[in-house]
Image (cartoon, rainbow over all chains, first blue to last red; front, side, top):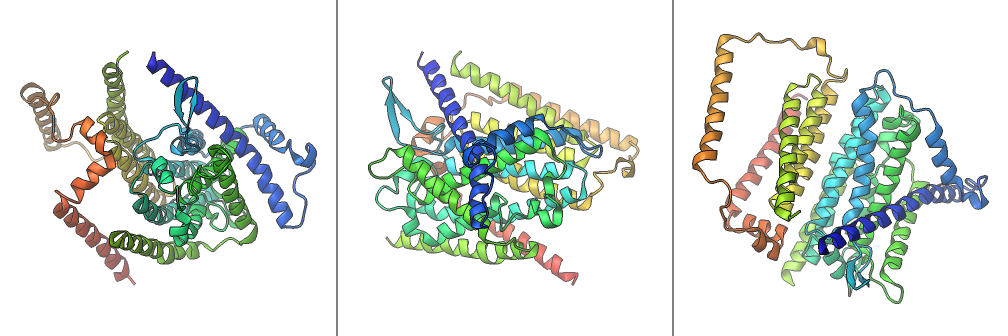
Length: 328
Length: 178
């Protein structure tokens, strides 16, 4: 009987997290367009509903009813699977992120995380690399030269920035002494890691932007030179899947930043999940702000920046952190 | 259903996936499709590691092999083979008698090894130094880390120096052409 309750609990947690995540993703598209609009001194979407509040629903319906085109040059099975890979990887990343302490419901203690695994942070990186396959394969299988260029850029960029991203996170792992995300949050009960690791926090924001292919690192889909890059041939729901995956990845990265540097769900007065959502929204706002502020970097500059600045800086951060912790 | 039966079914499914996907990997004509089936193989193997309670190894497998290394391989195939692996270019080498015999011999050796292993060597139900309960008590990554930086420190350092030599070699070869 215990087993069935456990399975029921996991299923309900999954459903709740996925629905909230999807809601976030839907309204994130609106929020991004609105914020960008205000940053560029225009209004943004305001025709569908008050303040454009029904815009995401309209977009969803539009994606559903559009014609689904598979180009004649496409590698059909890979072309169909690619957006699914992106989508599944982006959703499953959220499984290990804790959004609160445990609560007691119906006499059961329920941890507010779907899977509290021992190697949580590694799992997130593993799923992150998988998500990139969606972009690379989608670009390659379209049979379009712009798409292939986008895919190649995506592959190169991700290999370069993932190394730095992993190294940056090691600083927080050294401080907390655990790969388990709940323990990393618990280790920040007195002082958030952003205080101990301000440099790493900035580096992490930069590397994360490159990881999720956002401006100023949105090389794989730069509109002005590649005409949308890897997703140029995609239409209808497949295109929408790529977009949902991109925004879900964005939410996940923001949530991970919160967990690693901003003390996760910890905070006074308000309950844990509320703090968690507030902090995540703050990080998302910073991401959108950066998009509205910086121009796109040139491709070779991105690679140079990744390998010649970000990587050594991350390495230095690891060495210095380890040195200080060893002295203490 | 008890946990053991569930694990057995899971193992059978993943083992089948590993075998089928590796056969598909070897037989595909398009190199990208081969690479994709190889990723599936690595994935299924990660699931087998999970069944063995080796979480850290499983995630490392996905991250390093299915993630980074296969991404590099895909990247290289795409760079070299931009016209999606034209099948007309591949010429089939004829199977000579010697090749057939060598293949048959290898197959026989493999089967004999399998039979020997299954009959004379108890592969299951042996308890090693690190059973699942002991590892779970300390934490998976911690156990691996303590072994890697304790008992196996020397081989670990040698391996890292070898990798470093590989990187330096690649840079030297790339620079020579200029």
